[in-house]
Image 1 (cartoon, one colour):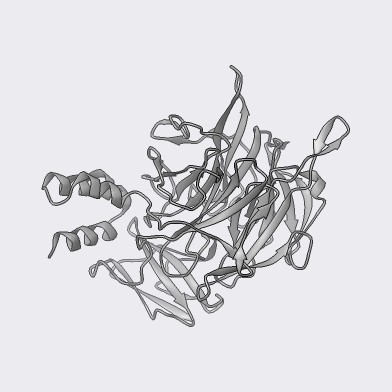
Image 2: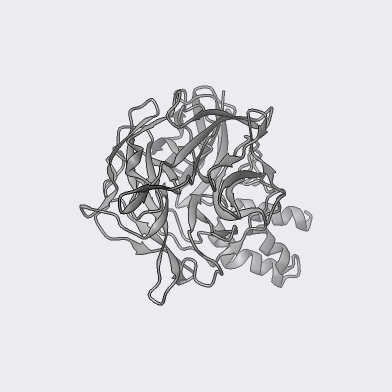
Length: 440
């Protein structure tokens, strides 16, 4: 067996925590690989960026930087991309108000490689009413806030609140309230950007929130907060306890990063080890990766690594980075889309950085892997082959939303899923195996 094949076999057949704690160190000590090779395998790597296109043309967003979120509203297995932008202030009494815009790009076609601009806000199938409840620098995120099975809109902005706009099931969003903690409106700085995911493995959606606030010594500083949802799976989101400051490598996230302002967080299992890793974009246009070296129930983020990104117009379009990560084109690799603003914050763009390393391949790189699946592609029932019991199976779409969940089963019915690409995490004896599933 070649050194490269041995390296790949080990890299994809054990979990990330084991890899970090002893395997790659042993390979370095034996002289089989260099430390630079080992480091490269743990750092996200993407192709040079290309401008996102919509309706055949580069998607320039007039009105300021693009703050991004992804969702699968129509449950067809592909990605809808939503961009919030800044618009000009309008004077209002002794304060200011504005009407942030949301633009929606949908149905990424792997054949043409382009988004279709389906709708602007308040037209066709994506409408927002009562938008006067939030202000400029719209920062969208999506979660089932009220527990009714569809995705609601949580809008952060220049102020210190998070507006909740409930979805009627047809992408009509109406203001309902501000997101609360302990019965009081959340108030955590400005330029608030949230992301929702199950970081503690209890089946409900927790929230990570980036914000900027005035520093005691003058100027500004930023923090990233963690809010734990206590509601339980399927129930309306409920935050009982105040947030904690998110930690990485025993320090507050962002400590030691120059220009760490207006952080835009995004959670995804990038290294395919069953827990959620963290990407954060900053005001300076940089994107940082925080690997989760913990577990699906107890996160432990490592020190940040800057993600090397190469794209045209860097230096003009290159501020206020807002990253999202998903398998955009269905090739099995996680891709990165980053929204940026220009130097004057009057227009925004979105760049696609295609993933280089295969993190979700259909090939079984470890022939002795504990769990295999068949048939794949699948139409109705998917079978798992494992010598041990399978305690938990979760199925995710390509934007990280959990669409099916099963316990104590080796045969699962996926007939309700639309055709497309999905990710299966199956847990047996404390180890999680990840497979890409193709639904016919």
